[in-house]
Amino acid sequence: MSTTTSMIAWMQSLSDPTRSRILRVLERSELSVAELCSVLQVPQSTASRHLKVLSDDGWVTGRREGTSNWYRMSASEMPVHQKKLWSVAKNHCLPESTSELDDSRLEQVLDARQSKTQSFFSTAASRWDRLRSDLFGTRLDAWAIAASLDSHWVVGDLGCGTGALSQTLAPWVRRVISVDASTAMIQSARKRLKDSSNVEIRKGELASLPIDDESLDLAMMGLVLPYLAEPERVFREAARASRNSGKLIVLDMLAHERSEYREELGHMWLGFSQPQISDWMASAGWKLEKFVALPIEQDVRGTPVFVATATRSGVAMPKN
Image 1 (cartoon, one colour):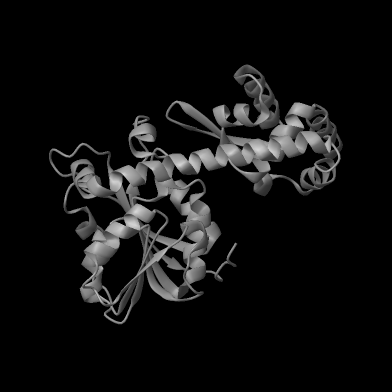
Image 2 (cartoon, one colour):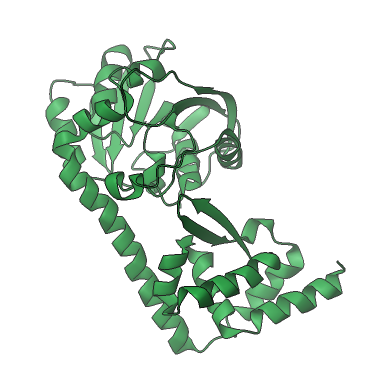
């Protein structure tokens, strides 16, 4: 398709106010179809029809997680001319009052999503270890850290939960920085780690780590990616906080079909594939070195998991 033909198709896409509204909100955040309907106050059939047009013309990218469809704006994949057209159109295609209402409802939807995750952790903190063991077995963390660790290393336990992994790491490294966004989880971690003098526990979002640039020799994430709206941002933050040639270990679920985990565990993602993890790591400045599916313990109820190891290969990303 020629540039002229493409430009005409793109302008036709933007000529509909609803499609322009969809692009405005999807530029800010990936949303499920149900969330998008809530933001725009339109029926699902209307949203789906317009998403089909936008997808066909290269404006949005969709993914399916269980029974839910999620969409985001395809900004990074767009041709230069398409990006320029949107940069001009987005500030002139809708009345200001409409945009303000959409923005307000978007914030409400994102707040509700975050509250749902926080609500799960608030109620799960006291039974988290048992729940984790029931699903994935008692030796999962040990498998993830089977390789020898340098005793001079500073290690980041990102999404530390109740501090079980930090407790395992602490005797073997110089310092552990444990980070979690849940107040209840942080409180449980402080109780568990009260005698570990080389562990620092910090409350904060993984997408904006409370860790200085180039502080970590090793960053570890264990079963946290499904709770994150934008896992790629966390890989970027881990790169920023890691030293040159620093290491990353990720332990998480392989792609699965257990859609009930959305309600039972507050998951936003139903596991991950190797290409998905590899792409996110590469764009964040990590070189994936190994991706291995781990053995499943007998009688556990959870889905198969993987461990991925990577080395920081690029320049540390700026903190968002």
